[in-house]
Length: 548
Image 1 (spheres, rainbow, N blue to C red):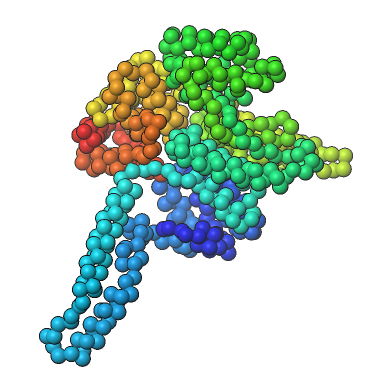
Image 2: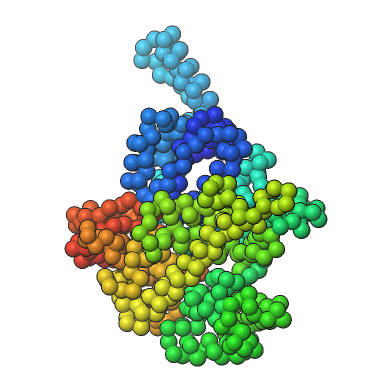
């Protein structure tokens, strides 16, 4: 269903109801959820928060709450796109038709209605325009159903709603920024779309900065500052060592080809060119000499240009909580995603969801488990302890994200060095077998998506086969050993001009249907499916035939 006014047609409709809020397990959805929660809190809206991981979860959750749910939105066939006649009313034609009816009642039977030449030409023109419009409509519907692609971040859409209602806050703005950063980190949108949305958010950041220029707020331990920055494309470098960040960031790893001895040597030359001592780059970023950190980004950019990394810096935002805590938007995305898909403990997915949601907040709720550790002499809670209770969750996510990035780069190196990426004709194929290190992590959608993106980018840099550089990649990994299933994921070719449209969703459906393969299309992303292990061969054969 299309909404022309999100405030009138959505928010004003639900604001007087008890709301069931179904939230998908991705970072952008978490951020949209946080903004909606804040709006509901402002307007005293009662709601039930239900995390869902796929269509089955959504169906189950709906059935559990169906007695309380009143359907407010109905989605018709053809995506609710109206027909030509519903949009264009030809008043002249209606008048002619009504005139013909009255004439037929008053005139003798068999008498023909005469049209002047101008009326005939107008009718022919209208019919031609209708045929063109319907052909274009079919083309749009086919394109919409054939490919999967992402539009504006959900968090940004909900933030725009809060802004229209003049209820937006800095926290809401930061969640919108993280939602956009999630699309960039997981390669869901084009660079042009990212830059355009960054510019939109930058205007909001400037607006909020002007609102909070008073000195008292800017010096408070409770302050929050959002800044626009051209920062480095080095994951988590401010919470890691510079060396480890370079070795585990996709951009630098693929550029240097760090899985090879030549690549390792090239990295050492790069560090020498920057004039940074190994002792400094191998220790925690916070422990580096201040004199080095002051000009670090400029030094890295200058040396990167010599090594062909001309896009080492990217437009982004950072946030400062109090005096010490600074986080880049991309780093928060990595942390929240790692918490969402934490496999170190046998946790309920709902627990991981709540932890990831909490990591996006800067305050804790006052409860027995999150009460402040200290109080001021006046009996007021010490806000610094409240900061820690939530920021500890974020720092925990950052540590998990480091392990995840290391696992991804080690797997990329292993796949390239052992030639696990095979050309199957119309696509590349890579299979992770049971027993592969960290294979449990890659049974999760976000982790496997990131691995797939990094692997394809690195493979394109390493292969000399020009044709292979233009191919998409399909990857499989064990998902449920007891059920005997694998997760299958497909991504489009690696290209700077890619429109990020993914066609594998429809291809997977047709391949499964033609071979009778036992598949589960449960993920909200159609290019991710679950497949019975023994059906893998015939499923891939069908894909080869289908895409050739």
